[in-house]
Image 1: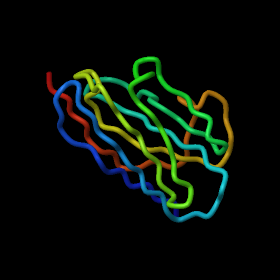
Image 2: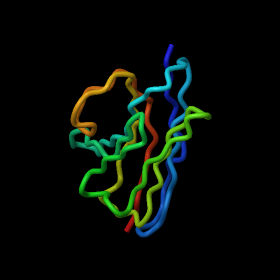
Image 3: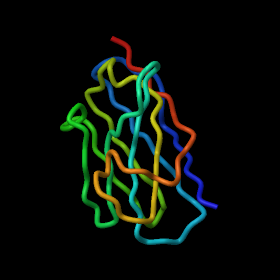
Image 4: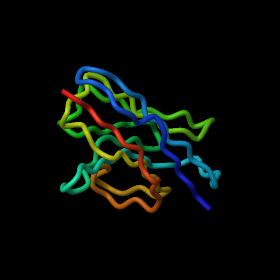
Length: 123
């Protein structure tokens, strides 16, 4: 059974940094397609960053140049380094994964989701 567990969220001031981690377990596939999504109160879910099995990355315009997605395949762990955080980055952040390719990595359907980790940025 595939499980995704996020960690690393917290409260920071604007301009600060956080690194989110997503520990994956329950599978041995080497081809994985993973992403980070966020949802703020009263808003829809937004794709933040994604990484495919070859390591190619995609970012939402709102986070380009500030966030970096990466993965450690040996540790089955996905990361999101978030720098220069802004109050508008405040949201619940979710990790997602799938084993089949699909277009539009920030908008595609993912089969597996974590429970989320809260990020709060104060001004």
